[in-house]
Length: 143
Image 1 (tube, rainbow, N blue to C red):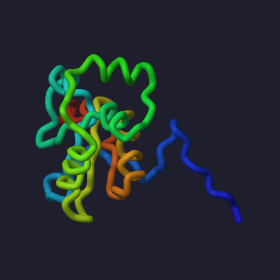
Image 2 (cartoon, helix red, strand yellow; image 1 turned 180 degrees about the vertical axis):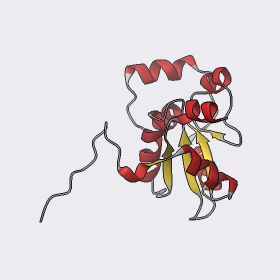
Image 3 (cartoon, rainbow, N blue to C red; image 1 turned 90 degrees about the vertical axis):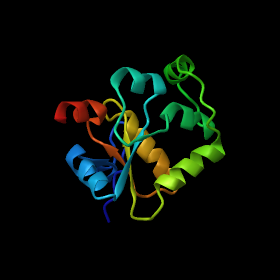
Image 4 (tube, helix red, strand yellow; image 1 turned 45 degrees about the vertical axis):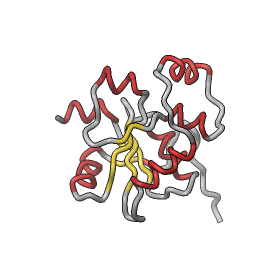
């Protein structure tokens, strides 16, 4: 029996990404919700994602006890501190994931950080977490 290759950090599983058009359709049908994993200052500079809940990835990683790279910590330190604690984080995610059919659509600027966010949410048991391919830049280009 052939051994299946596991995705690496640089190669996401095929089922971890979703196209922007499909994500927009899921949101329109109320089957999906956007989670903006950018830092607050990025959302302010680039613009908000309509209807998205802001849950910055670096802050979430820190809350969950994950080690941040030096660059991630610098970006986190550059932002205005938020009062989100671990209980608030799970409360927000559970509200968004209110049914087993609700898809958590992670979005960052380019689609790279959102892959990490979707993977992290899946590790926490949220099986319907996906990364929106191309991120906010694709959304802005499409709009």
